Length: 158
Image (tube, rainbow, N blue to C red):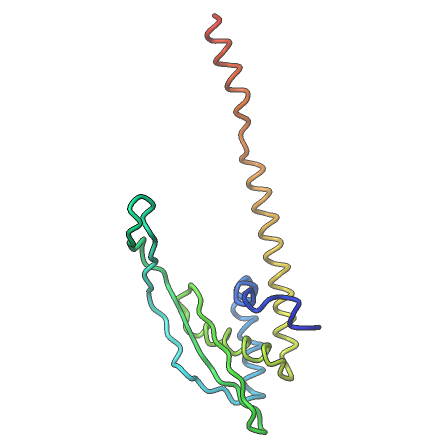
């Protein structure tokens, strides 16, 4: 098992595909093994989503999105420490802190982080299932417009 199986940029996406309780259980186990300090208090709130107008190139705000963020330091008994962070489109600051703990532990490959890696695998499987379900829905809603052309031609002939 290596952390290179999944790029770090995908970790939050894979973890958030799973129920939050599963994530909290693993983070709680890591918290009991290591000292967790908040470098910034976990926060949640609203962020403005900026876009550029296609015609004039001017920036405008499409709307508000929920954001949660956390930044933690994880230290072991010998005083070595690592940091983890998470920013996600969600309104649960506690979930952001949970993900920051998993992020730091797995990035540093701390003892006990194997469970966080197992969660990545489970999240990857869940996202694959979601993608397959979406493809099935897309296939079920596909419309064959070629039949419309022949019906119009028949109407014109009559």
